[in-house]
Image (tube, rainbow over all chains, first blue to last red):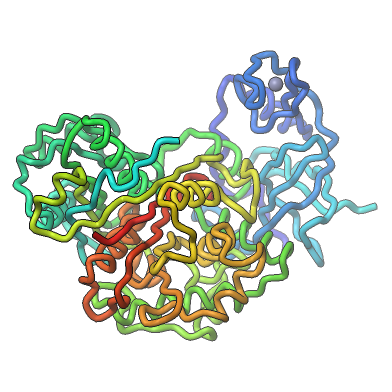
Length: 138
Length: 385
Ligand SMILES: [Zn+2]
């Protein structure tokens, strides 16, 4: 079953001045994350300071888009009613190659398992392009 | 590290019978009802209450909550504050109250949490990182987060759906001896739990608390004051707390939580090992929370909670009583007060007043609180007089 995710009236992100570059890049199908200019940590979600060393010298870098599935859940009863037409769908924790973990939508595959290699799969949700993931194809 | 051991005692408890719905009630009037029960139980006059700890009231009283509650109750406390630790708020209140009493800020602290369940609750107006980075991907609410923890536990340790379901079966079994429990008269079998609808895999409906309206309150006094009161005090022997993250994506671990150091610290302050606890009153918003707490407490090796549960009898007559009031899985979850039900039950058991489900001569109890996604943790060791 294919759901028209783009046609659903879904709650979008609540964008702030600090996070705006992330969502602007997402709209172009890119995944960018912050990197600390002092301790060199990669940071996600975007912040005004580095949570490791409290430096404010944070810059943006494009992530490789590769990651590993740390956990997942097939959502049968969504917490937000706008997602009901899409259920069941999969939400997962993606450990990015750069090391931070982000929560994302995971495109369903035949067999999905923790430890699977994932790749970025920009997807339209409710009129916005967001950084979703899918199992690596190669 | 300085210890709170025996500096303060719980002198009074109050609890409202949970209800699925309320009509025309306000949080303030629920707070008043349960506060009166606790203060009367302590044998104190309202005027003796000089400390007040309350929970947040999102969407109702966004600011000045302690003053609003104090005014409503006619109190003029010398210490008043909000404790905002989700399901750990109740336990967090107790050790803050004990610390305030020990520091001379006040002598008798009312800790109170209550909630209504009127029709059509408003959707939250959050603008926090979870709202920004989780909700747009289809992850709203706690069910998804705990499902992610549970799936990770199953993948890493090979724990099974039955292992988790057995925790819900015990909660329902214990609720059968608590007439106030929302599931009193409705036990559940392993098959019932496993056949209940899948909400967010691998989490079944019956592994999730039922939201209810209700309230719980406690009165904490100095150890000296406790001796002069007519009731039987229960002493605070140790406390510990840890807050590690908010969103599940930021959790340092998916299979061990901040309760691990919080419980270790509480037991260390009390000078007691986990094995000495006659009651484990463990926060149970979901079955996975109890599983992780059993492992973090060191009752078994990581990943082995399933075998531990099979090896023990968790009822009030059993070798390892856990959540004798039914836990929140059996009693119902009155929002933030849900975490306080574990403390109120520990007090009843240690006073010997848990009618119809009394553990034989209990001396010590461990009560835990947990908020958000295994994010905020508070543990208390309580001792009989
Ligand atoms: Zn840094």
